[in-house]
Image 1 (cartoon, rainbow, N blue to C red):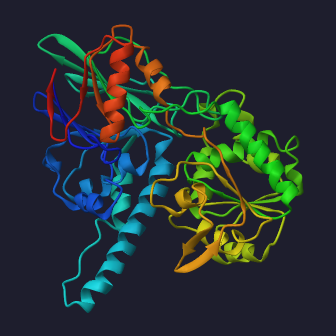
Image 2 (spheres, rainbow, N blue to C red):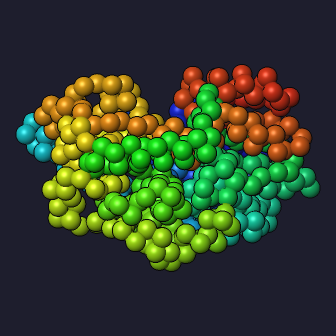
Image 3 (cartoon, rainbow, N blue to C red):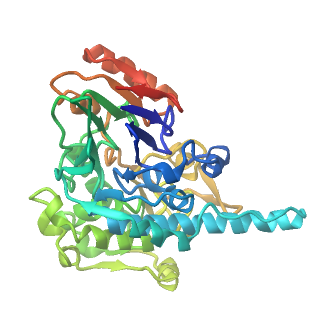
Length: 462
């Protein structure tokens, strides 16, 4: 068995690995490279393998850095089955259509500039019309269901606890009468999360391909984060204005809504009007309601069909653009959850323009804000930010909630690996170069396993 690392090597995005067993070839994930334009233009490069030669693809979860090149892969000749947990079907459609729309708008924007320069137009990486072909190739499976890929290969998915439908992959290959097992971690969930069950893994694999996204830091506890969110809402009630919550459409939004449902009376949320102002987050939330059986037992009552709105009777879904614009006339009493989580685009920027300069406003930041973003400037205490060229004063109270990540932190990544009783060799991917080096050192201090950092294009023989 050979494993080729084609993506997410010493970087966080672009997940893609190839497994070769005899004449069969399989892919694990096929994600978009995200970041600067220099990074993202690599998405248009030819695949380092012939897509038509791939027998099947196994998808760990629907996040775009794991799934976002699937339409391009199918366009390029891949016609095999795409295996994933059944809960990914709706998320994939939502996220891939959104990604395709962004590809179309990016090409349109570039072409306007190119035409003015007399340059030929460029095609988008893929379009919304390319997404249905991907969905038609999906083969949906349940956790722990062992499926045969070929005479000598099989696989099983186990719950990764990251987002809805996220999976660890156990891949089995029988060569010359000997069975070998490789575990691909996918993205490892943050244990103790309020909705997802904790990651499920054990056994004695021969090799582990392991992510390292937060390999250099730990998160504060879920209990501390819950308390921070409660105190932020109480502070906002005293201020008497509106509350803005930038949030990722998948995972973070549902976590916030879960806390609102659970503590509706205790946090006096009946005195607010709560708006989910993100078409994508609305669709994702509706998808989450279809899979309550996958969640923690204490969580399930909040997530059966229609239960969320029963627990939060003042929750309003504002998918329509005009409904969203109407929120800007509200001066107080509104909690507005909108994308994007990093405040780099989306409807949250419009709400910031109309509220951030008001001292009665409260901004609750629930996720990491990278260097160079508007969100990071606000977190760092900048008195002014720029939105569409206009300088906006930051008079709002700013709260940061530190521990709502869907990714395991350093300590929990170690605990995940320690569930393998044989200390198997590890290949680290999915982490920035500096983070992955730190995590390698940390693992070496606490385990006896052989640890390697994956390089792009590297081949491992097992």
